[in-house]
Length: 325
Image (cartoon, rainbow, N blue to C red; front, side, top):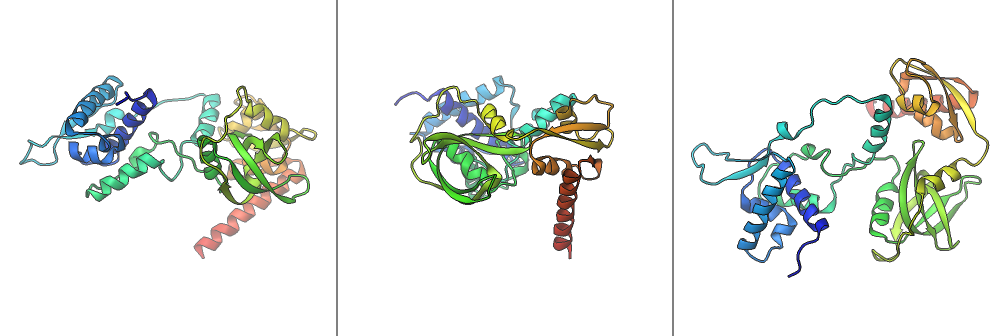
């Protein structure tokens, strides 16, 4: 039998951490073996024991506080395992405004409602064993993504698996909808929007697609691994070049003290300046960013940006009234 690769070992360790964090109870070795896919696929109990002992030591060397104990005050002979959550949690950390802006973007790729496949299967197996799970404990361990664009998750998965897809897409200039056959390379964020960079098969060219213009259902039209991403693809440069078409404009926004760090950085404003001049190319994009700050941001000019912000705030109010009526 061939030895596991570094990637396989890392995935096994991550699944072990997820299993140990997913419940507040002590997990027995057999429960762990059932929950972690790589253990369950083992050839024998002896092979599992050797692998588990190595993994325990590696986690402890990595600083993961793996502890042993038992839920029973009467029967302490069956050892259980779990991770000490207080010791595992990060201490209080302070960040600069620039660091907070970067973390704000990164958090959008770390907060998805659904767990990835192997971790989700581990939780299902634990539940089948009667173990009460606590998925909230896994925030920060399992990569998650939450976005407003329905196309994000299937396109992200297709880019990860290198599987071609088809979808309908509304063009920016005319709004006309057309079918696209695409090899998805990279998904990236730029100025508050998500974009897909890939190869358009019909046009035989590299194209950029804004995810909120993808309509209908994203469908895979081939198997995983059907194409390779070219070396040296600069997705951010391609996206910024596309999104910057047309003359640049500015909007003046009044911010509450300490609010709107992303807009401040975008404007290159000093920390104490609460009226910032923000460059933009897309009215809808900057309006959504400002509207997301609620009462902490007021557009002073131009009129079209202010009206776009007001329109979004009225829509949010109407939606709220509709859910509470």
